[in-house]
Length: 210
Image (cartoon, rainbow, N blue to C red; front, side, top):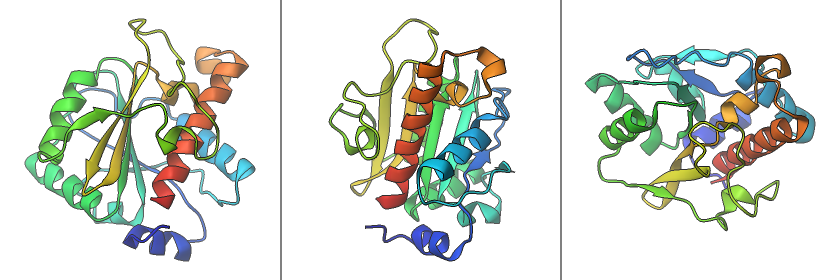
């Protein structure tokens, strides 16, 4: 059962959406403009959750961040947060916020460094295939789906816990974010697009109910 401040705000809001985080470093924080609108459209079609499709883009220090229960970050390379942004994201996650991070290829080592700055007392750990996030709405018995080849490694889903609550899900060597985009962008086969959408819905439902 959701008990955070964010669940209360969600119950009072007419529509749900996800905020995209802006960052420094040149890692293309804006990559994939059709991804979140497409995911939110499918979420509304397949569940009872009403969604707002327009993408919200905020810096971590924006006071408005705390209006959104889920934040999203993606990129292709260096990402970086100022000390003030690190503190803001720490408050956000400790207050009930949830972060979805998607390595669109090339941001892995930078993200690992920044998430350690944000929650230095927590470790980034691989989630087992029987974790609820892989089964809460759609069933993924083998964990994250593989959407794009990248380095050809198996996809891995990592998480960060704070006081026993999963506060961040990190998709590595999967690129579910690109799988949410319009067909014309990557021309992913229907089964890849569907797998990415289903996994995204799982993450959202998990974040909103834990």
